[in-house]
Amino acid sequence: MNKKIFLASSSPRRKELLTLAGVEFEIKIPDVDEAQFPHESPVQMVKRLAFEKASTVWRNELGPGESRIVLAADTTVVSAKGKVLGKPTTKAEAIEMILLLQGKVHKVHTGYALLEVVKGELARKRIRSVETRVYIRPLSRIEARMYVDRGESLDKAGAYAAQGHGMTIIKKIEGSYTNVVGLPMSEVIEDLQKFGWKP
Image 1 (tube, helix red, strand yellow):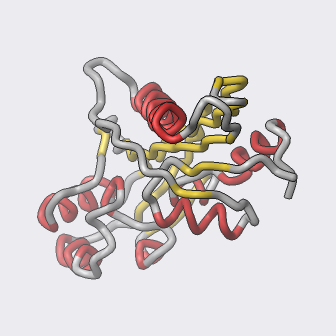
Image 2 (cartoon, rainbow, N blue to C red):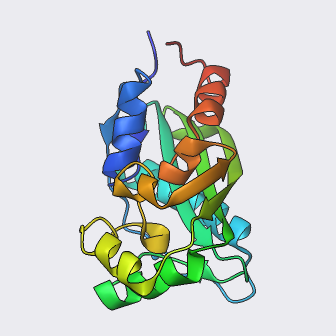
C-alpha cells in the first residue's frame, strides 16, 4: 500500500495535475512568506520556497509516530530581461506583465520538494527545479487587456494561465507543459516512484 501523501499547496492546478496522474493525496496549506531574498536567483528562490512549504507542513501537521510523503512546489516566471514576475495584484499590473512578456521568450521555473517522513522524522528529501521556455505571441495593449478581462490572471505568476484562455496567446513551449501549469509531472512521478510510490 502506498504511503499517504500530503500536498502542501492551495493551487487548484497542482491538485488537478496530481489527480489526473492517479496520485491520491490530502491537501495541507502551509503559511509561508513567498518573498524573494536579496541576491537570490529565481531557481534558488523556488527551490527554497518549495522546501519551506513542505517542511512547514511536516512540522505542523505530522505527529511523532506518523509517516507521510510531503510534496510542495513553487513556480515563478522570469521575463526575457531577467525580471521575476509573481502574481499580479491588480488588472493594470496584469496587463503590464502580459505586455512585458509579449513577443518574447520567457522562462518558467518550478521548484518542488518531496520529503519522506517516517515516524515523524525526516528520512529522505528530494529538491529539484525544472525550467520551461515559453514564447508569447506579439500582442497589442488592447489584446492584453481583453485577455486580462477574462479573469484568469490575478492568481497566476506572470499573469497568464497556460491551461486556460492563455493557450491562445502562447505561440510555443520548449520543455514541460505541466511545469508551466505549476508542477512538472514527469519528474514528480519519477521521484515519487523512487520514494516507493506505485501507480
